[in-house]
Each structure stands twice: as structure tokens, then as C-alpha cells.
Amino acid sequence: WVRLDPGASWMYLRQYFYDWETERPADLVIERVGARYPSPQPSPAEISRRIDKLIEWTPTWYRHLERRIEGYYDSPPDRCTFNLSTAGMDGLLYGKGHFTIAEDQAAILEFRPPDCRYWSIQIMNDFWESQEFDVRQTSLNGHQARLDPDGVFRGVISVNDPGVPNWLDPVGHKNGLICARVLYPTSTPEVTI
Image (cartoon, helix red, strand yellow):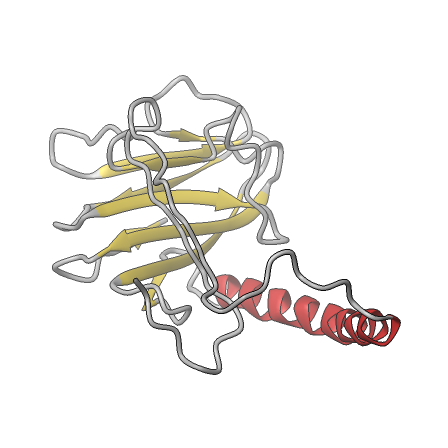
């Protein structure tokens, strides 16, 4: 049971998987106590109100995305900057960074994972979109990644597969965003680029 603030209008739920092959999705039920089912048909006035609300919301969403993307580019070019999540996700540190490479270049990420429940590195395009993670290796987590003997994760972002462990495929993009997630770490990590 999760008590929501009386003013809450949405809930964010994210499930993290380390072993994508064997972990099972949670079986969740969301019930709105006191709701009537089926919901009554909306009136024409209610439909009009909802359309107006959508029209008002659309430009604010693009400004929201622009601010989020700027947060990645505000990080220095040689590291990710970590902050505690402001979206209400308890114990989650977000690392934000960016990369720019030429066709024949690579960006190397170095990251010593702290003691934590979960960590991952993901690359996205300039529009803050995840890229084909179901068919390309655009992210790696602590279960999937291979650490070097010194305990450091070294990820390679390059347009072409260099044939090394921890390649992160930018799906043809020569610049983009780097997102690191660390859940309940014992210390703030560092990701250098």
C-alpha cells in the first residue's frame, strides 16, 4: 500500500532488472478506492476541457524535455555529474553526461561501481530517447557488464563495434547523452569520459 499525497495526480513506477533472462516482472495491481467502474461517459464539455488541457500541456512538455537535455550538456565534457533523483525515486542517484565522437573515434567511460543495489550506464540520443535497447547494446547494468581486474567498468561508445566487452552502441549517432543510475550507493560514484 502506498499513501499518495492528496494533491498527487500521477505515480511513477520503475522496475529495475539486472538479469534480463531470468528475472520476472512484478505482478502489480493498482486500484483506485471509491472509483466507479466502468467510468461514466464524458460529456462534450468534459471532452472539450480535456482537449484544451492537452493543447496547453504540449508546449510545456517540450520545455521540460529541453531543460532535461540541457542538464546533461551542463556536465563537464570529461565526466558525469551525479544528483539525487528529484522525481521521488528514493535512493536513486542520476549521473548525467554527454559524448561527441567522430566515425572513427570512441569515447571511453570509466566507472568504479560503489556498493549499491543496482547500477547501469545508458546512452541516449539528443532528444533524451532510449535507443533500440531490445536489439542493440545501448545500456549495460552491473549484471551484464564486465569489470576489468582492477574492479573498474570501462565502456566504449563508438559508431562501429570494436569487438571489445562493454561496447555501447550509439545507433549511428556521433553525439548523445550518457545516463548513469546508481540505487542506494554507499558513496557518490564518479564516471569519467
